Image (tube, rainbow, N blue to C red):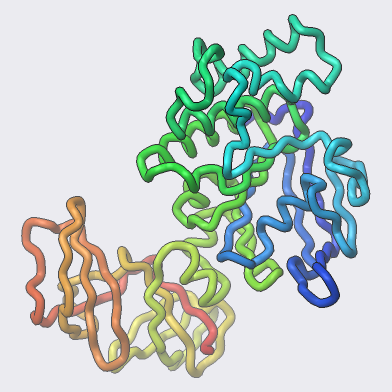
Length: 354
């Protein structure tokens, strides 16, 4: 993927944001965002992700620490001097202006003449698949089209960093998939540095080069979507990035980087991840439970739900209640039946107890 010549890295160095006397929204975070990458800030409400985004934009000022865009310290600079553009959750389009006027609006403050402003706005609309829509009002567009106008308005300014604040939350599920694919394609084609905020785990996994999982004003883990999904650092990340069954277990032995665990008499070997003999937890994705295995744990089928492309099961045993999925929709398991539940060879992950 090419990197846009204007795309810049973003660096947070021991950044803290405190509201009032003692409300810590962001607590001493360090973060490096590479130029030309799409990095998502992901976490539950109140974790600090939107405050972090707004500090990049200059809409909030850091209480402590330093923020760099490229090699420039922007910590104390106002939003107008930072060369960033932001796409808001609400789209923030002017209802009385045409689509072309909305896209052109920011260019009018950037010193471009009318001809260049018009050309840039037209190119921006073409980039987001809205060629020929310039004369319409926002009210004449669908939600997905309005969001594309907001993206075009940000793109035409050719910012060093493009910011997205929950951009898909007002769209229905089908449109969310479509628009997130559009955003990802534009980012990759143009080589933009993008920082993207969402609380939707699937959205983050779909669009990101890297995900920053935030919790309680700090960073819980940083990694690629696959790293976070397959190797979460702790229970919070395992549970927040997709669904995970958390099963108490006992590490009975460790040999090099391999551990043997015991779950209610069932033994399984997997990477030890530096954990010692003793109590631990096993994180298992619903797709990594093997139903009808030759070896495993006997469990009762408590619920069976058909959702079209797969079956979803709730399984119970004295040691845990598990959620499993199966693509076998033609011969579903009966509620009340006992099934042997095994573990996939790759996928289950050991976590520290507690």
